[in-house]
Amino acid sequence: MTRLTQIALVAVTLLGLLVQTARAADERPNIIFIMADDLGYAELGSYGQTKIRTPHLDRLAAEGMRMTQYYSGAPVCAPARCVLMTGKHLGHSYVRDNSEVGTWESFQGQIPLPAEEKTVAEALKEAGYATGAFGKWGLGRVGSSGDPLNQGFDRFFGYNCQRHAHNYYPRYLIDDREQRPLEGNGRGLTGEQYAPQLIADELLKFLRANHERPFFIYYPTVIPHLALQVPEEDLAGYRGQWDETPYKGRSYLPHPTPRAAYAAMITFMDRQVGRILAALDELGVAENTLVIFTSDNGTTMLKPQVDYEFFESVGPLRGLKGSVYEGGLRVPLIARWPGKIPAGTVSDHQAVHYDVLATLAEVAGAEVPAGTDGISFLPALLGQSEQQKEHEYLFWDFGGYGGQIAVRMGDWKGVKRNLRKKPDAPLELYNLAEDIGEENNVAAEHPEVAARIEAIVLEARDVPEVKKFRFGRYRE
Image (tube, helix red, strand yellow):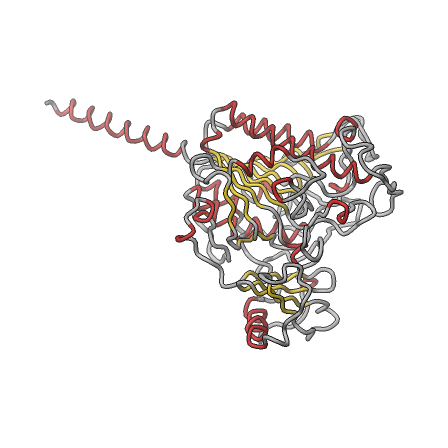
């Protein structure tokens, strides 16, 4: 064999290895993470809802896993998104409450993520994933350090400001870093271009354009957050089913049939999930795609618009959006990964938004940034409970609604409220195994448990960089 032949054989071997490596990289699982906005724990059929139709999400649950003890990272929008993106709980998170930039109608967004924060999108992008975000961002305006295109996303379409997302017929949406005008819309109750439809359409374009390489799609849909707005053809599916008290408008736009509108919005969202699942089947990538669905927090507390008692939106749980009781924090989580996640299964593993970064990094073979608080719940999803690590406790340090702290430690739940006015407010203690509705404060009967949770409160809280998020007492 001549030296030239040897070199040629080596070259062919190396080329073959490179092709195999590239093919292996391309076969890494795709990830679609869908997060509803203000969807309650019991507002899906698979979680017991009987009035609102969610057939596609129910199918997702039948083909995958439901988690029954999964939690948001915060009971309102911006901090929940910060916790999700950075993998840090509220005691370490940069954003610990909603905080607006500029005047209310300027739509300059919320306080931006600092440049040094590393998001799940950055971790996956570094691992070779195409990354796209479609929906409501809430972590910084265009051009800021928190701009999604500065935080690991290749593509963004939707609302980068939460206040702007209070109307679904806006005059424009953010298309990467530009404003895309929406002709026929005037921020009224109706218009010619329904933003949630446009957002889902752009997501599907991204999916089709990137399906031959590993992709991460983050879909923080704006539904069912108020205002009550839904296309007429969707509303027709519920109109006349129930007695209605028209909402005449105050905090959001009025609507003549609020119950029908709210149910129709959730069913519209469900249909977009169905479109995504159909596209995965059509493109032949469903078997290699992990789809996760959850919510950013519990159902809104604005009862004249969302009749949470009528829909039994949070089931037996206490509290709603803005509260660190279970109804404000416990949310549905459904995951499907054909051939990997056992179909039709249910997990009671305790997990939380700040576990998502670690989980998706493990799925993608990406590096978990230093200084995060999460534990991957991939073993639980795969049905490998014996390999699943557990948190000693889950933690929430929420600056809103008077200043609230919550700790979940096994079956125990500790809650402290009104800490802005009363830094030494007493701890409430509940045993969730016996008292899912958090009705019976048993702190006096279990002083040793209460003392341990009080110690956790001090050990888990760092002083926030942003002064307005500070409240209560910090360790010295």
